[in-house]
Amino acid sequence: QVHLVQSGAEVKKPGASVKVSCKASGYTFTDKYIHWVRQAPGQGLEWVGRINPSGGVPIYPQSFRGRVTVTTDTSIAIAYLEIYSLTLGDTALYFCASGPPTASSFFDSWGQGTLVTVSS
Amino acid sequence: DLIQPPSVSVSPGQTARIPCSGDVLPKQHTYWYQQKPGQAPLLVIYKDRERPSEIPERFSGSKSGTTALMTISGVQAEDEADYYCQSADSSGTYILFGGGTNLTVL
Image 1: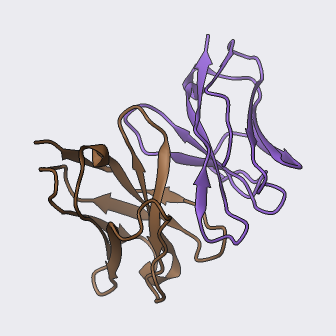
Image 2: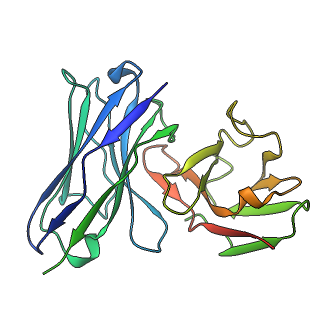
Image 3: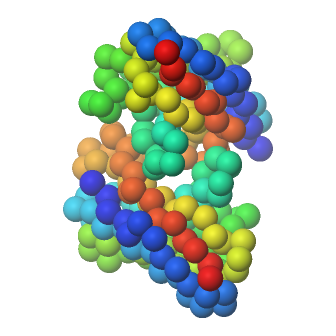
């Protein structure tokens, strides 16, 4: 049974950075992608990027490229999302999710979400 | 882009149909997620028409051309939620989401 547990809520000022973690258990960490998805208040789902813990470069959509970094520590089965130069528009619930390590991946298990609030 | 209607309303026991349209859909699988307030999304349909074992049989999926469809037969009050379709770009590299459909059970 895949279980993803995320770090707690964060409050940051504009221009700061934030790093959110996602602890995986219940499966072999290198057998699945870890994706990050965000949801702004009252809005829909937006894909932030993904990483293959077994190797390879992370993939980010154009809208986030250069402003986020996704990494993993396979020794402790944790994935991280770091967001730089935060703006008020980055206020959102950030989810990690696991998915098959294939093209056209999807999300078969989700973390509980981490609320990132950007406020001056 | 994946396009969904913002809202669908049905009475209990009726059939709810939620479409998702996009030019990439003939080439890529469609996935569907249910999200209730304050909860993480839950996968309800994968690879166009497959259902995870824990999802009730009243949930089904289909696809024809550029339109995928999620159907809930015999809607129950507990099915009231937001539903999102998801696919990928033509290369399979980049994930795409529909804008979401709010299902109201009258």
